[in-house]
Length: 444
Image 1 (tube, rainbow, N blue to C red):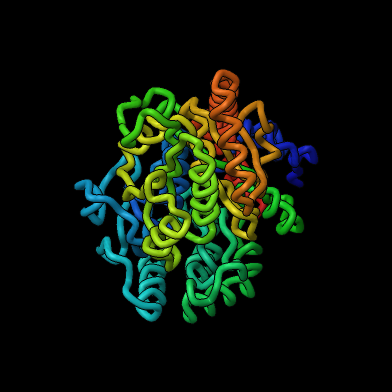
Image 2 (cartoon, one colour; image 1 turned 120 degrees about the vertical axis):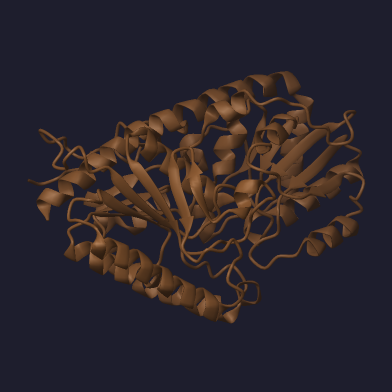
């Protein structure tokens, strides 16, 4: 039987709500209902962490909601964790997800050789467990942003045991816009090799889940097994959050950015924009919440703040815990996502955009990637030119000066987030993908 895809799947409204890109339904699921063990392999932090953690947690929780017994297998930690007790454990159960660090450590391997060795060791451990399992013990295996080197042994064992594989890909393996000095020679070489070998992985898996039109176009030749599933969040966490955090000066508009602090997030452009606003006497204050990543150093941003004489209006706070995060967003007057134009930006869809919208606060987003496919300027949020401090500054002034209108835009943005990104609609979409994966067993 041939599986077909709806050719209108380019419409993100349909895709996100599960109404497009759906395989032609078959009479019944080919997979016995008692086989519900799903293995999800991801290099991430859990249960607390940054961007990769949000994707891993949300997809695993959606799988749990569908009645699957989800086992999250983590080769090693990225090291972006907080101080909660769960972040000192190496295994446990969180929201029904059985998770485990395969190297029994919450500390990221210290150098490139250790990373490569840990990846191999973890592969052998998972492959051995897979070989020991019965032919009907595992429903499928998910790989989150793994390269072929990270998964070649697993794909081989899964193939010979006829266990379907799903690749969830949200980031490019390499972006030449990031300087070599930030990445490091070893990581640079590994990224380039990952790009060269990526088609080996794309060919072997039975389904590919992605978040952007960029990947949909790049992977067009795999269209018959390609699915769109952008950000998945618990909207209720942000809708119902309290707004009890004080950012120090309630006499001005408090604007907040929360997330990774790095070259690919546009924080430098945002700081310059606030330097311009301060020079004009605009009453606005920026709070940046997060941790420096990708080889960046917070001192670089503090120096930029000093250079633009913005020490009175720009502050940096450390990353906050998972449970406290919605409260910080909800306490802002305006939220901002200032990503620059880059391959990474085009390939991904930041969870922070959906999370900011779900708070019901006015959101400013730069134009990058698929943003304009999902959101309309002046209706759901405020869009401005990326990599342009002046454009960002002008948009901030516009929102401050039109506060009543901004309230209505914020409400529409919240409704949009619940329509497109809430976990309930995502679980429905994921169930259709799982049906497709189950049917792949018959096709094999």
